[in-house]
Length: 95
Image (cartoon, rainbow, N blue to C red; front, side):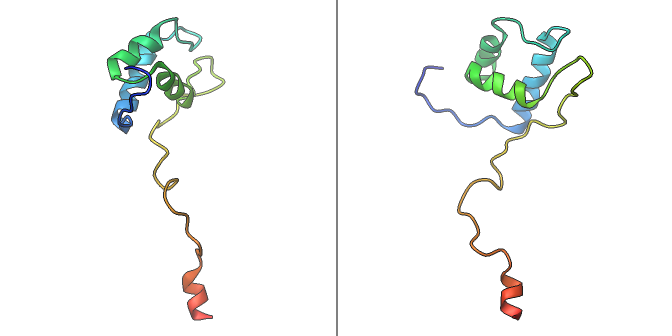
């Protein structure tokens, strides 16, 4: 994918598949070997930076200090759009 091109965001299923593929390629210490992010980026049609960001979000560390994250879902839902001005509208109406 060339620099400057915009691609649709990865779905939750694609993110989970990406983490599963990365788990098969990681070392025993939980690190990715050189070139794996580029290979997975080509396989999933995303940038290597996106692959590394998803890997970091998965919190994969196989040395017992961290565990594998349950989900690596998108964090956009509920975080985008216009923010609510008043969250206590029913209380304001009754008062």
